[in-house]
Image (tube, rainbow, N blue to C red; front, side, top):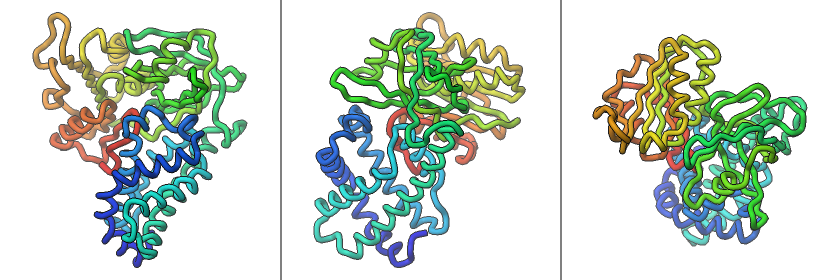
Length: 394
């Protein structure tokens, strides 16, 4: 993929670029948003920009892609690219924005590294960038066409939906059942995917967030929102989105979804990470699956545990399913071996299981480590993280 000459330059300069990229990315975003304020207003997550996680994710993706090119020159890191592409399509990033990013990213690299960016170095990293960008553009074009369907417009995937029901799962978690307001059918989805929700905030900004589908109904989709402290979109939806209102959604996307088959399934979640797991369990129950299913969930306590009743009911519908719940601070009597953080060493993991993980990044790291220690192959461990993926290449 990467030319031999440029591969040598990239390998030699990767430590320098990698060490400086934490300084490069803030300058890049500052330059880009100064030139294109509409991108911050209506496309990029303002919360993630403010706390710096989006900048870390960009740094991780560039470094991971370049490292993969050097380590495996004849292979393309398609798993990493697919994850990024799904996120890009879900928020409406288009092909034209890759040139905008290129302009301001390379200007930021020169700002930081100065004379170290020789024409040879610039050419080598230019090739890295466009290899990654063009691969993403091709994947994203295909995803947009698939998401639009035969009657949709790949250039504009947003559609109006009417809220037909609202469910208060816990004090901070609300589910919305929505149906298309344009008369067209509900788009196809796979259990474990998410939808993008676009809403206008009081200052006029149209911010976009992704929320996992927690289930489907006849002609409707159900997505679930946890109200985060300081979350401008989640807070706005909790306070202002009610039954009968209209909200804009993009089609379901996400590369981590339940794969049909006969093998055992292990679902491990923490907190609101159980939303895609609930959708997976619903699908298994609705299809009369006889697969071995082991669900493991960790939460603060019983009151914070959204879909607690659903977990019990769906597990009971499956002939070969078990559920294990850990509470850090349980209310009332609770088994000692299920008190504290999720500990998979206390649970029998079926041989040949495919594992799906969802929750905060520290939880994902801990659980993935436990699974690897238990002998589960890395290829059989799939994860979804809410927000920017700071674990690219893991």
